[in-house]
Image (cartoon, rainbow, N blue to C red):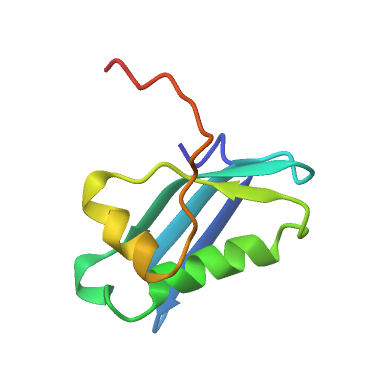
Amino acid sequence: MIKNANLVVTARIGGVLVGAARSITDFAFCCYLSDLAVFLDAQRQGIGEQLIRETRRHLSPSVSLILSAVPEAVSFYERINMPRLTDCFWYRREI
């Protein structure tokens, strides 16, 4: 998963890895943030939001950041005011 990503941002506390954001992007039009993960005991400290902010910092303002949330994470994205897409289409994974 990491080998094929071309933008990986990590968060550490005291040198210990506590979170990561893994993306695939062309750095021109869109960036798909495919994984955002923060260890349970490090959650609710703003780390996930900062990982997204840092990911966006590596992109120009003309690059869209897109992600697909698992149902359990929807409230997080709503809480950080990330807009929902109404004009998005996809074929879901079959596995």
